[in-house]
Image 1 (cartoon, rainbow, N blue to C red):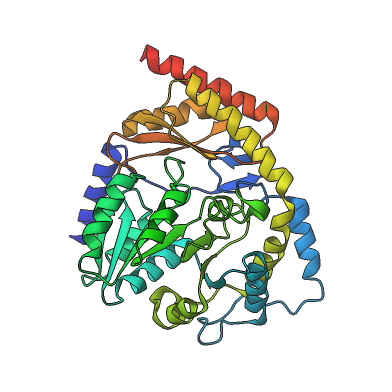
Image 2 (tube, helix red, strand yellow; image 1 turned 90 degrees about the vertical axis):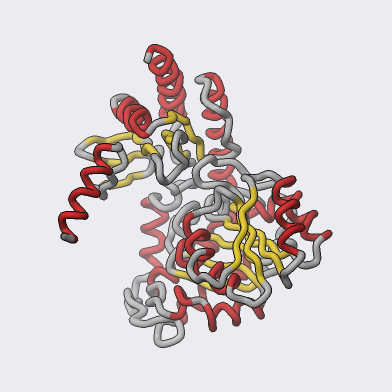
Length: 394
């Protein structure tokens, strides 16, 4: 009966255009090999092109000469997993953010889900999250029935303040959770407005997910909170290492007290094998490089400006304020067709479908990176205008 249910469910998903699959792919700078074809990669989170820079990889490999580097931590951070390389990564992180302490996790998902759950279980706490917050935060909010969580309309400060005032009436603290750059629409949170509200509401704390903005924005790539001048106002900042930094894992920036509290309460940290020593060394290596990558950040900004203009000319809603650019198609079927349309022109952009996004909001999700050449960007812009013509004919 179990197998039969699975088969029927998979068939239903296939019929609805919602079936997912994992297929092998090979990335190389701005290109990707998928299904035997070499395509321009428009779906990578390697925003600065650091993750697939072969010269940079070779430079890191040179630092490992002499051996003695372990490829397994062989335990959780509280058992045997806290190798000296973890301290090196923490030192590099806190040199970049001297205002904060850091705590490393295996992934951004593990960090968000675990930390939000731990915060939500503090007596008198209400979690107040943006309607379009990432699934990892939602999992944290719903991990225990004792957690009180409310939602506010996406990036809507009037809605936020209304829900905040209601939540404050019977709580000791309210923790507002938002993404600096939202992973599906590519728009930015009104961080300055949130910080201003925090200063007027003593019970309010601010949690910002910088997964898609760390490395890309701010002096030295310190993120959107730093760029917007609200780094001190954000109590908790989540940064991933597997996107713009070109490495793996994630870290949370917080106070020393909060760091110690999370070490003792976050299940996804306590019960997970730690990041490997060689990975921690790579994180430290990349964190030290990040402040010197301003040329790549400027290059990405220039590419974004060109593609945003093409998206507007193509008639797609101008949702994005970042390197993540959605081309809304409406239905799952149209999103799949748009991806095939791009593929026929040598472009690899993944369709994002319901239930990942709300019904009727399926899209082609373009993710830009600094490694794209001028010619590749021109091909993308041309394809966007051609996609517009096809949609009009349809």
